Image 1 (cartoon, rainbow, N blue to C red):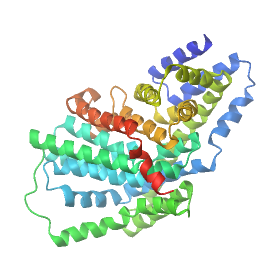
Image 2 (image 1 turned 90 degrees about the vertical axis):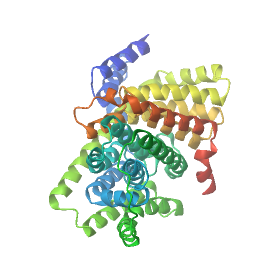
Image 3 (image 1 turned 60 degrees about the horizontal axis):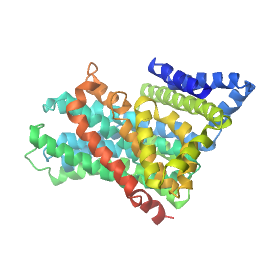
Length: 427
């Protein structure tokens, strides 16, 4: 009865608009008090939740992404992508998707990708007569590529929480990320041609111009190579690779003469706020996880699935539905810390590869992030398109995109090798 009451309180506070860190902290505190647990446990568990060297990768990857976003790397990646796909129908919109994939591969953040790419390309998309609903329906979903394509901050949190290799998760995201990028590009091309969106570039880009944009984008494009290469070679952990990304991005930004003292202060302040928000959520979620554990909730959930789910496939489909629904309502970070300790052991009981299950979680969170009514990336896409734009205005096109991402989720579930091939190959 207590568990049901706390669950109701959890969703009531959530729907009232209270930040998720406070929601799980308050509910956890009440359950500890009612359970007669000493209150100093809260401080101990909150501290233990973030007392992990690997979590340093989170603020470092956030800082690297902010440096690259404001240090001139975004526009160089955009020019590079546009040189190759700009002549197609919907060229600028396709450039948006490709640039988001490239920027996601250097920033690791979903919302950061949406705003960094959107702030540059949305004005141009509007000039070319793309409708606002179409723009938002592309900018938001393209942003979730930063969640799937390594290095992903979400993968860092999942790897630490599940105690699985962050490097393996990074490599597991490459093929799904590339496939989803291609699928979105094909959709944008088809819809732009059908609706007459955009201006088709008739003149061919000269070899000199192509060389120029390739040369300028070359060093930014090396960022994921350095990150993944250092991890794969064994020279660096994910945290140390994040340091490499920060230093490399800072050097490039200084070389491009895009940074000044004012920008540096903005980057530091913004990165600190974003990092603190994520780490507070992780800290409070660890308290809540402790509450669930002492109340034997994970054991009850495990017993339910092992008794009623007659196959790994049924388990994956049911968990996917749960993750999608919860991911639509709340922030992904808290869900990873809360649900991974419950679901990962059950997945392993069913004989599911932890890396495969991790990618199933990641893909479901990507889908949830663009699903109304509370898809955070979709909200970000609408906001960067038009501050007054409501999420309901994206419906004519976002439903198509949701179907594409949902098909990708199903593919990951039914074909595990899509996510496990590269990690197994590189071991």
